[in-house]
Length: 86
Image (cartoon, rainbow, N blue to C red; front, side):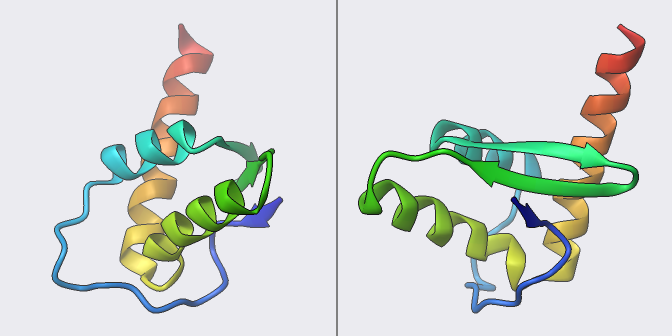
């Protein structure tokens, strides 16, 4: 597992960012997430180097930008909180 709050990377600033779309695509690629306290962890189980390269490339979109990481983290925390109530 990799903490969502670290690991800088180069990302494109000219692309509009939607945390919901990012998270949906992350899950489609085989990723998942878990909350431990107030920390969100990204994780994945993949079959092969091509799948790993795809998900790592997708993760770079949030790793290089604190605002994007925080937006994804807030979305995940909101979803988990809502699921706990339902």
